[in-house]
Length: 241
Image (cartoon, rainbow, N blue to C red; front, top):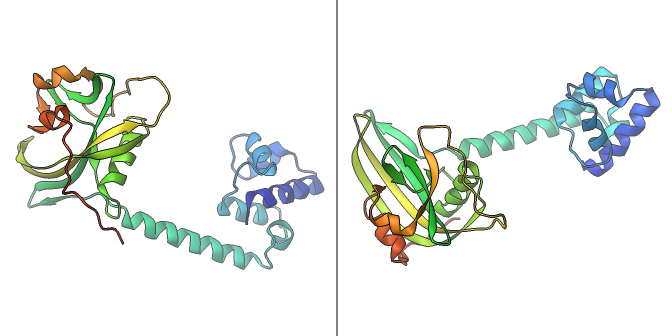
């Protein structure tokens, strides 16, 4: 069912019953009648839950509105859609777990450079590249693109792998084990350089000059040299079937 064909049906049904857009919006739980306007113009989707609510609220004929013979068919399609989404969500899980109280994580980090400056995360006197946890079912490249969009707002592409890094240490009183893959990134945004807000945690995003990488407390140790030397990890490859 396409939004372009459902919209006119909704509009014809509403007018045939003498229902205003505001009344229909309220009965379906929408916050404003403009939602109905967009749906009727074919600019927005109507969820299966809303379709079913409309049918039940107004005792409408499913075939008349949505071109299905019985409401059971609509329910069946809805259940199939829910199962597919549940399967996709179950597959996308962060690779982050504890072993006897000691955390392991598979992370990605990205070096986004604009001009002679690089975007970093800063927590007290500690700096690091913006990073995130890889999820089951995605490659490290997919993970860094998603992570940057979600945490910094920048749309990026991965240029190359800078380094693969394994880190074993202690933080917050617990031994930690991390496996990280770091990418050199390029911004896809035409907008001028901006500074994202903080990530909702203890850290803030800051732009630092490349020259500062030699003197600041940048983690993991050694990543600054990889960035400044334009390192390329030629050994990295992915097999995704």
